Image (cartoon, rainbow, N blue to C red; front, side):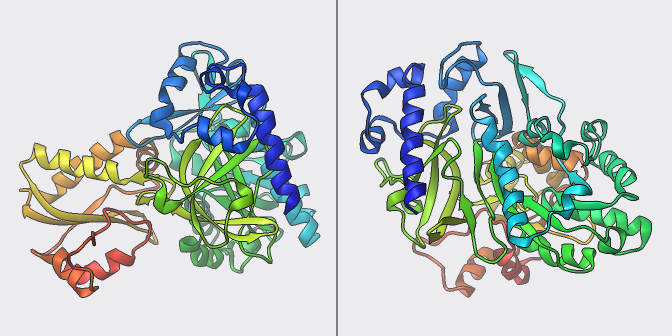
Length: 473
């Protein structure tokens, strides 16, 4: 425990030393800061929208803005009000993304004694490694960037091929992945759970066998990005048995944590990898002066908004995730969700502002009036989609056309959602009309009518949706 706290204190000093010659460091008087308390006073919490001015300077070609020199990459990710976000990755920070994934595998080997999988073929499902350039800086999805840095000792066994990974259309890409791997000795699979399931479905369709009958040496699944639990039962059914899994917590802003043991709950926080962590009780995140603590003062069971400072130049940066500590020796966390309501059952990161805008824009265009609505994911045996429960005051003339209009607005608003629709991983959204006063009756049925109680605009599970079923038309 002491080592982790000491590592964090050392990282803060290193970050301040390197950052004091940058534009940001000069503006925030880093040269005068020697303690965390002074840092906390000098550097406010910011989200991407508040950071955007600095990113724009970098995109204009300026050096030494947030970190020394220029970023070696921009990781492109979906924003909220900001649209597409460009997250800097520096020469110093790239090792955090690469070595953390390596360390997760090494921990698994050390605990299980199983290193055989390293001699077989390994699938790393990723975004396209083909990168564009913004102000001369290579730019793309994080998984595509990381694909360029897979260590040489794994590269020879890596599948699919670079050419296949560059295919944008998911169904075409999936067919090629199946073609390249179906007769190989696959031992490890890394990817987002819904992608894994589609891959398994296609293999079973072609061979009529369970996955572990096709790949008897498949030893481990590495996953992250979305909650594994909704997929677990179906994935293991497709496999034919349960096999070890390794959960990771990577983000464009940094690799935060990874599962270091099969026998304990939670993910080991990455306390010695170029990131200085801060924590704000989740209920205070939107206050003007929220409580803000370093690692040494965190408490078990408290839900915290995760704030990072890293060696790519993110300072007091709110990544939007909430975590809870399940152990303080060592420091292990579980990811409890996002600060705001959201849907990311398939990796789409759709948030409240996006669904509200999409529905209300379509309603304005068609003179439709909305009383209330909520959105939830449907994880289907075949195709999956978002199900929108909507109570209309004035319904559309053609519900199907109205749903398409809402879907198109959401695709324009959220690049991940658009990618999943384009790649045929998700079907277009479905609208389920709710009876008049249906939401009121629903809130009454759960004892939450009136007061400060509100229907969540969207959920990452079907707890609300399943109860709303009886109030739908």
